[in-house]
Image (cartoon, rainbow, N blue to C red; front, side, top):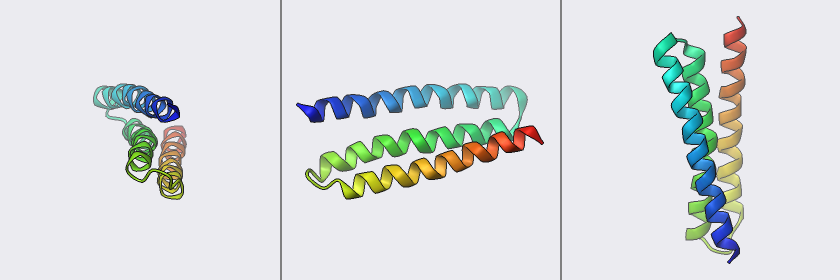
Length: 91
């Protein structure tokens, strides 16, 4: 039963992350701002990584180390890209 809640949470992360990526990409197309494109890429890394961790967990039931590692590294990469995009927008 807990796996259903985990799957639901991972799916919601993917959906709402996809909405953020959509709006950032749309803003990039309007403004041609590279910072907006980087913002979209960063949020895509975070959202896809969280979803991938859920899929990996479902395939490797019982082993949490691989999904947690995948999610952690995708979040690190995503947030680094987001911070870079925000710093780039300031300059």
